[in-house]
Length: 297
Image (cartoon, rainbow, N blue to C red):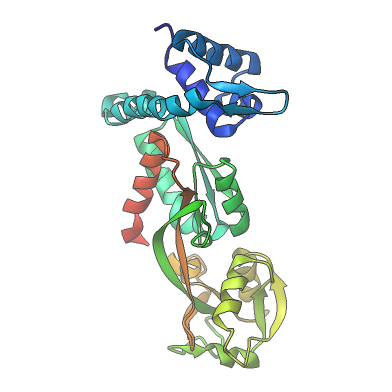
């Protein structure tokens, strides 16, 4: 048959992204060049793969049947190449990971470094986004997978846990609470608190966990993201609840984290991906390296 792997990649990209324009951008091709590759594949196979209209492109029955076979061929080739150390420097590709900002430093940065050492020609795009946007990026196929603490209840998404991190009270080392072994959430009603704003995923988790607690933290300042909250706490504005790993590794040397109890509220961070859609070989290699790195968290 007169077609090659680039024609298969063009077909899979259009099938995944749903439009020729999106697929051409992903493959760094012009739309006419992409169309020629798909046409060449259809001519070689002897049947059409897509139903095209002026508004959209959809797989027909033959295309739906052929798609898993095309994925298998490409996956087998990529697996063979990724397994050959002497070829690793010549392999090209792109891995796109949507990630909550607080996980970039603790989870992703070291994995990107190690991944580039092993596969220096595979590019990694990190979309640092709020938790709800991470879900959208994965659902819209704008990312191969996401790293998030939301997604366990989404029917179209699969959630693979990576780490559980309880919320702790972040405060300056010279604060009166810094030497405590634990602090009840109700005690924060007597403190000046910096809080994450309503609508943020972390605030939602905290509100759910405190649903039965009568005395709530009293906030004097609200912010959208954990890094901004930590900056305000360092400046002496108040104290605040953050996920434990936000203070791990001495990232904020002037701050300490004191366990919050009654109740203990835990944020579960994991890998989120579209259910039923297998990862490509390069994204799978990145995912495997990510899960293998859990021991150092």
